[in-house]
Length: 82
Image (cartoon, one colour):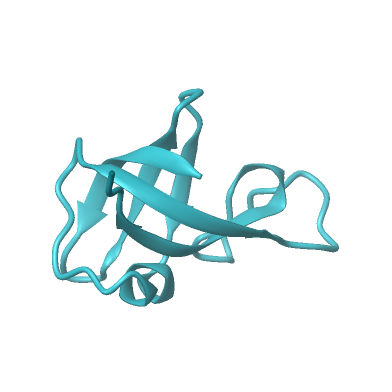
């Protein structure tokens, strides 16, 4: 899946991406580290991988970093390459 880097905090290595439909999707440090990046700038095109989280209805959970809409959790963030 592709998106655009929206926010990034280098201290916590967390942030969010905007999917192509405009939906924001947060990511946690584990997802950032899995992509092997050192830095992410807002506006960069990224490739993300997600997995579905089961069990909770409604999707977002403030207690679960990286949890997003529809129960999707970002597991990897890396730069989009052609």
